[in-house]
Image 1 (cartoon, chains in turn red, purple, brown, green):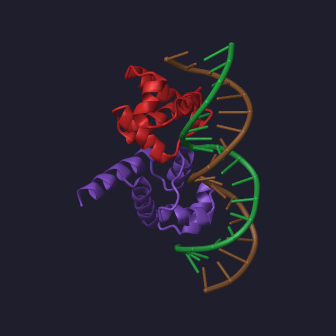
Image 2 (image 1 turned 120 degrees about the horizontal axis):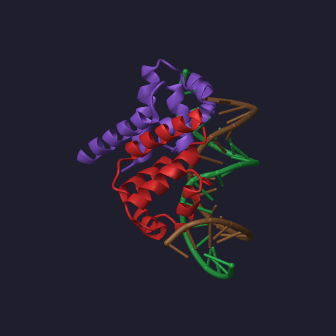
Length: 79
Length: 79
DNA sequence: TTGTAGACTGTAGTCGACA
DNA sequence: GTGTCGACTACAGTCTACA
């Protein structure tokens, strides 16, 4: 469960790994900075086209992001 | 481009392969039948939690669906 | 640099009915 | 079984501003 929270965690991790600020990621993905903030806190969840926009900005395939979310979800179910 | 259209095509193909009607898929994924119809026609695009709901109903990983969408997008860019 | 808040527009997603 | 239409509610996503 809690897909938004898993996605939130993955998104933040990927952004940090790319050494981007929320502002820079927002600019690269043509999204709003405050919206990136909300995504990283699990307040909102993206549509798939938003997912693809973020994946391009992060230089990672959208399918890989979803894979990471799946793994994160499984881990949360264990604990 | 045209993520919704690529997703639409993949969704319909996967549903047919699972020998499900739109009604049955809607029931399994706890979504509305008319909404499935709209997704398959590229009129709407899902959020990621809707994507996960559909993936469970179709017995396929969400990440694999996204992979198929990526491939479909590439093919459309060629032609 | 990030979180939050409020107000706004567009669309995700539901529901009933008819071809 | 599917497409479509109209009307509806909830949320995706923007923008300005302040801590």
